[in-house]
Image (cartoon, rainbow, N blue to C red; front, side, top):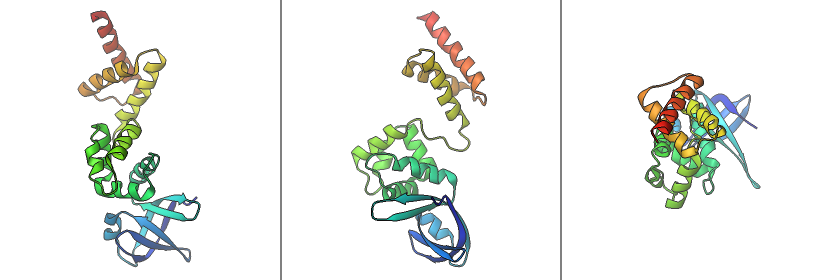
Length: 193
């Protein structure tokens, strides 16, 4: 499994680069933005996904680990192959994918060539709660708190609503602090019911 490549760009076109490292040239599919930002002869490090198929092996390269992570998540969705996933990341970017999933806006995915309405809905459905980007620590903390609350017997929807309510008014960096605040909200709503 090839996890990253660092080397010299020896050839490029709009969607592929050849990166030579230790005398071996690797053909890597990349985002158009990545190809446009490098020149032949330049040095480049890419985080890569090594995709195996029955009849081929392909490398897909990304400048940031976040791009790679979103690409790999997209590839887990039924009906989304590596080329479609690359197109989605290329057109929407990491932030765009995150926004589309968070707001359940499948129309953003339908705007990508090759992604139909059914696949767009599947992307939103499958990636909800799985995208955690740099600087969004509250999302992962929120997921952990949600898991703790459902283990305590709270309904998923009730727990999610309480977490959203608390996160809308305050940002927490500690899981225990968020859990306490959410439990306080849930306790008040039970007394009021």
